[in-house]
Length: 482
Image 1 (cartoon, one colour):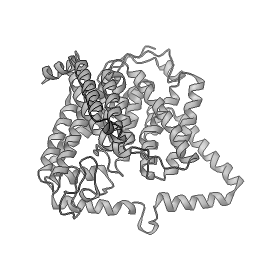
Image 2: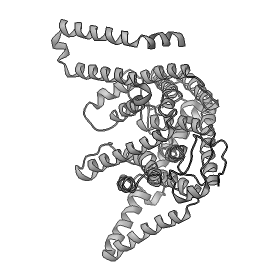
Image 3: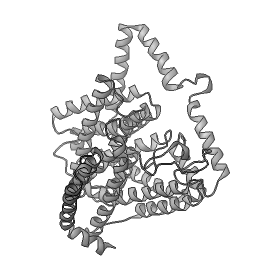
Image 4: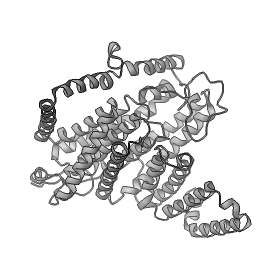
């Protein structure tokens, strides 16, 4: 298989030339067809995809993230991107696996083996689903995601781990500015529903920018990132998503507490309390109205008499009922019995209401999909990720080094696991946050198995991003130099 893929990769330019000749003949034979906007979009997308393949290591991670993001935001051609994202992921998985197998010293560990068994479990559960075609397509998408995360995504940071982490921070900074402009200036909901806005801010933007502030290379860069971080926090609060707020706070606490930087923790709390006190002195009535609004809309979500988790209790009870009906093999990966008689009208490129419903918890949703037997490899995968996060925390407490590029990836994983407790996206491959999360999770597993000489404790105390600190790529063993 590798030899066949290697042959196609070697002569890829010949294939590009043939495609150009076919397109030229097509345009000559039927010029009116080429004038169709949909056809033009497909041709432009194919050209961009070929260019990205030519510079796979440098740009394809960005291409995959953009393809899934554009399919989920309220921008023109959203439906076209909904189809095109799967083409991009297929190309990313096949080309990435080919290149990774050719790479000298390539590594596949226990985490990747667990991911493979997760795919087998998902495929097996499709056989008992009431919507087998949809379940099989979702299992196939999980296979493509894990193939790319285990190969192509790892290429994005191979031998450039620090630059990769800084690029993630820059991308989140740009995302904060664009989102702030959309929500606070133009008043347009870029991400659609508030929960999606909160998920992006709480799992990705706020944790990565928090790390980026502490590791800025200059005062100008630090001030710019502080502004982006403030916008991200504002959007997070504006979303009103409790799960996202918990995710952002969990990731930030992971960074500050593991670095034993209690002064920064206390300073942040003091700034927040001082801001509330100033607002209270200026307009005490505003504080009262705001507190009432927060209690009603954020804490209780309109269910004050039923408890804090009342809005989640309905989906959780429905999931538990399905689990009791199909305890061992589940109801099919990514599908749920909703009363629909068939999947005849279900889309092949996006989840439809007739084949799935809200669960309110990624782990309950997974148990409902694959059952008690099928969930075992998923528990191995999740347990492996918890161990990777634990390694990062131990390294930070031992060395007080927050500049390591594994730290922001661990923060995203912490935020993702917290957020997935209240939202069901962790294995929903069509969702951009799921793709982003698992790509970073597999990259984190690479970083934690490398060896490092940790920076001197005094250097790490002076500044987390200090150029005096030496870093050699990982932290299986750390040696204090001071």
